Image 1 (cartoon, helix red, strand yellow):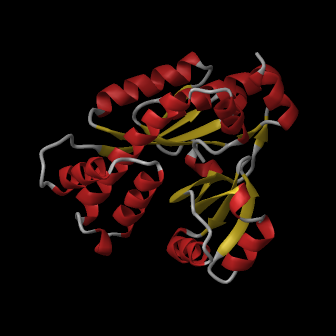
Image 2 (cartoon, helix red, strand yellow):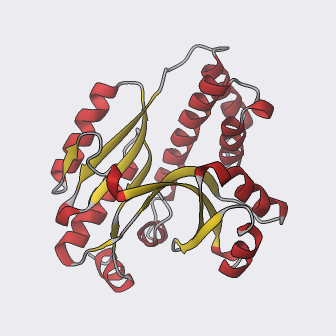
Amino acid sequence: MSGHSKWATIKHKKGATDAKRGKLFTKCIKELTIAARMGGGDASGNPRLRKAIADAKGAQMPSDTITRAVKRGSGELEGVNYEEILYEGTGPGGTLFIVESMTDNKNRTVAEMRKLFERHGGVLGGGGAAMWAFDRKGLVLVEKGAADEEKLMELTMDCGCENVADEGDAWRVECGVADLDAVNGAIEKAGIKVEKCTPGYVPKNKRVVEGKEAEQALALYEALDDHDDCQNAYGDFDVSDDELERIAKL
């Protein structure tokens, strides 16, 4: 999940927190706008908007900024019209990527995505180029310090939890998309803070990469994740802890 891999943890420790904060605000604003446009501006009857507002507050976004984004989405204020687009591509060593984006100019975004893939030894593909290698899942992220793996499994196993995975500084609770609200609710009811709750993509089989291919795959992932129009980026590759530490020192 974008921003919650072991690599992201290492990179975060190296700095760039202000830039990441600005990026997070941009993502939150786009999600608020889309959620309000698709389901209306009343959060009580719009689960997606309700979660988007919670995420924005969790990111310490000012209340007036949240309100303006919601009103732009619902049509109460004029604003940018965002469109959701999914991109798929192949990276170094046959690695596969899925990018969830929101853009106000799809021609610009697809051109920039194509350049990013090419610049990092990959190629942007058409529909189905990478989707076959991933499962669509409900994903709930919980910080490591908030609960342990056993506790999360115990809380959610009767709600549809399928797996609890290690995401570096967070636990990723996986479930069916239809069970996402129930799993999220069970965790929050126990007083455990949820860092993120969203449908996403989980690789069916992780491809282990090392050396130059690992460096290139991580560089592509980071470039995609840092793009202004990217909401979430997913890759099917895995890099060992030792390799991550080595690459972080380059």
